[in-house]
Amino acid sequence: MGLRLLLLLLLWTQGTQESKLDPNGQHVCLASSPSADIQCCPGWRQKDQECTIPICEGLDACREDEVCVKPGLCRCKPGFFGAQCNS
Image (cartoon, rainbow, N blue to C red; front, side):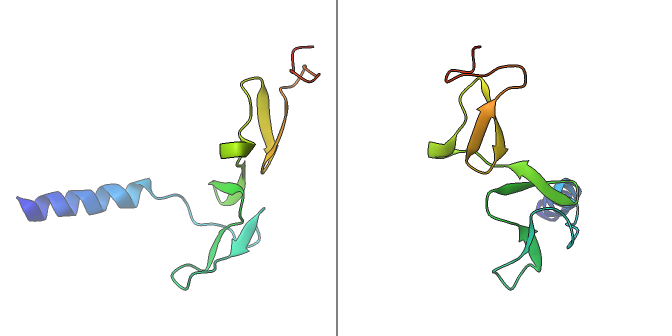
């Protein structure tokens, strides 16, 4: 039973891994660890084969009416402007 569970877990994790990064893709950097060749540059998350999702978390988190446009940089959602993004 334990071996079956381990096999199922291995098969499941293989299916949930993200696709391989394109070395020439946006915001793809050389990895600092020897276990991986390439990875997303700091501040970016993987989408498909590139790193195009900016990260705005912690102190740099966006407010409810904002969107993250670059790592740590939030802007008002399209169609809105102003200090509170309500105009």
